[in-house]
Image (cartoon, rainbow, N blue to C red):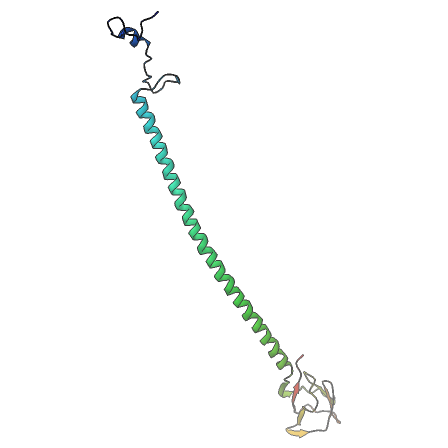
Length: 182
């Protein structure tokens, strides 16, 4: 029977045998042994490495949280901006609809107002008794002046005025009339 670690007759521990049976800790940083205890130096190095990694990860987490908070704030601002723009678009669409209605009313009113032609001078074609107007006059609106004098001595069909006699090159014919919008 071995006396290692046991008290002898004189109650003393056999220290030589005890020291020989204790495994010494690993004190090199490049050891691959996983069954032996670490030395205080290796524990300190490992602890410092772990603390540095935890610090770096903590900083990353803080940066991600800060960016997330910033993005959430930006998102809230963007949602508010979008809502404001949607309200403005709805108001503009309403304004456009109102303006379109007003344009339709104006066009309808304008279509019912005749256009007046003042002093249209027609070119005289020698040896002809006819002249042509640019538009068809509204019934009863034509006023014709032949050589400066008001005249009713003509016939009107569409845009053509026919006189009872052939016109001379020196004759001056002025007409005033209203016509409808096309």
